[in-house]
Length: 422
Image (cartoon, rainbow, N blue to C red):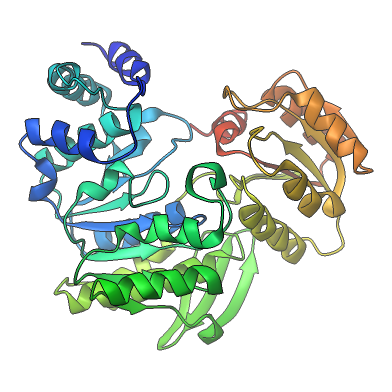
């Protein structure tokens, strides 16, 4: 099997009338000798910040000398990014060989696995073969019925910032969404929760009590901000002084506080993570398309914010970095998102919009998006492609302006490619 054949097979998997649940994943992994049983995990759920939290934790643990697996979704530029060991994506030939190995077991199942379930199984086999000391495992959607939840009690269960997203699948209420995400909490486990959403916090605390799990929340009031620029930011937290992260978003200090609390949990579990590993790991964190600065003249930023909670955080960062400035946006959204709410958060910041259609069947047509923006009183131009939108934004802003592409992670890879970021 070639790499291209492997991707074609992976993407051809479909639901075929299957029910929600973990049975298919358990069956497939059972046929593969349960590779997940050989591994230890940090399991991360939540609405926003899962990827950034995972990136910081994996960077710290790698700096501490561990062999670290990282499982995230979606990918930005290449599929292989979804499974990494010490920040190296799975090589093409290994993905092809792995898919060829797993395929007969998946094909033999009466109830076929979904695409995400198949990818999860591939990752578990690869991480076990790579003899990872620990795997930072990001939930795909929800938690309780997500295929990543077939693992035993993790070293830490982390619940990132909560918001209203995937309401159709997990809702309709915040409590319903929180209950789904709290499904990763296991009997006797250790939980670190971002907190700050009273309805969700109540659910998470109740699940922890019911499952005899310890619960820790960061104290965001203990964060003391330092420098903040396009190069990154510094901050102090509790006993930590002068920590630096290269992630520019203002919200990233909160995510870093979650990471620091998780490190403390890991230390209590016997993991050897020095202060120096924490400092260097945070400083070396790389996480593309999360308020990433792609150029300076004009400034061009790409951010994967795609729901009201994430867009609000992006808008806050833009206001803080460019007070009083109007910004040109390159925007594409999924039609099933809360489009009016998302637009309402960024229209007040905008000089103008160039709308695009991300490469996804769920994406809204660029012309329809432009019409919605103009109905809100802003100037909008529909573009033929993401590159066309990027080129027009750069031309409109000139050498001293500010442009930002946001609205969907599915277009972030195309935006980055326009700047030679692969």
